[in-house]
Amino acid sequence: MSHDPVAILHDLVRCPSVTPAEGGALAYLEKVLFAAGFAIDRPVFSEAGTPDVENLFAFRGTGGPHLVFAGHTDVVPTGPEERWSHPPFAADIDGGILYGRGSADMKGGIACFLAAALDWLAEKPRRGTISFLITGDEEGPAVNGTVKLLQWAAERGHRFDASIVGEPTNPETIGEAIKVGRRGSISGTITVTGRQGHVAHPHNADNPLPRLVALVNALVAERFDEGSERFQRSNLEITSIDVGNRAFNVIPASGTAKFNIRFTDRWTYETLTARIRAILDGVLPGGYSLVFERFNSPAFFTDAGALVDPLIAAIEEVTGRRPERSTSGGTSDARFIKDYCPVVEFGLVSKTIHQIDEQVPVADLHTLTRIYRRFLDRYFGTD
Image (cartoon, rainbow, N blue to C red; front, top):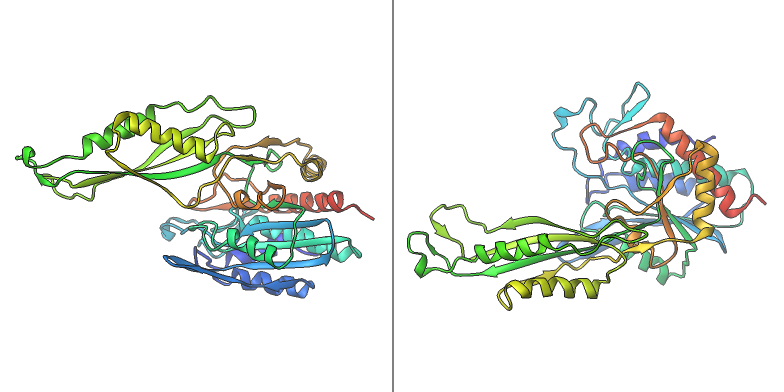
């Protein structure tokens, strides 16, 4: 292969693109893609209360099929840099391992798909269209990134037939799993209001915390389902309980609890939010407020053979493994893409993502690039 995914990843990791900073990563991709003949746009999206975010959309070709590779160049913070064995944005290679923040999640996936696509396009004239849809807002609020970039592209006449998101999908070894769906996600905040007062005079106050605890316990005790054919069971987790009270001798005026539930295809947003309200009403009717967050997502499953079958075949050819069709794990930007075209996720190993010393074996980068290249041959055909 003439395009080296290791060299591409080296340059990307050296861009300190901690959400929401662009850090030079999109500028680097723009330079590489422009030299390869892609038409490129760099829209910036804004919304009150959230940071402005730079994005990139690039395409080459005409007509169908139209494959879009989607991903993000933003990364999570490094944590204490002195705890890294190699500087987090140096992209050092030591013992066949490339170290750096974003190396696995998910600049490595971008580097591999880019190398595979550029080699494939350079080989001979090709039919169809390849796009890159890259955001800087996947690790952040996800407000000014993929969700708006997709709408922006659709308004300009782009119609996608299939998408691969290069998120790290393999627990231990390349080829173990592809993500063909995700459970849904709903987040909410419960608030219970009382009356502040001195702990020695509780008759002059109204402590909201016992009522808040009762509501939380009711949610935690609920077993929403036993899973389904495609998804592990729904689970609700309490993620925060806060009263903003630093004093030991003050009864607080209010308390809040935040929760997130990952749910199966047995539920819709409407039926599940109604169930949650019913549980809370059964404990404290009318005695609380409940607000659901703006961006929630339903469970989805991709069963498009034209996308899934050639990807699985390519993985088997290169690795000898037949990957599991998985729906486990958290959310990704696939939750937005599924409204525009069939989407699957496949990338590197997820073992060190978001950790100190995030890393990827150099050999895995070459393996993933070969898989993407075989997939392109199968998806578009070799004529």
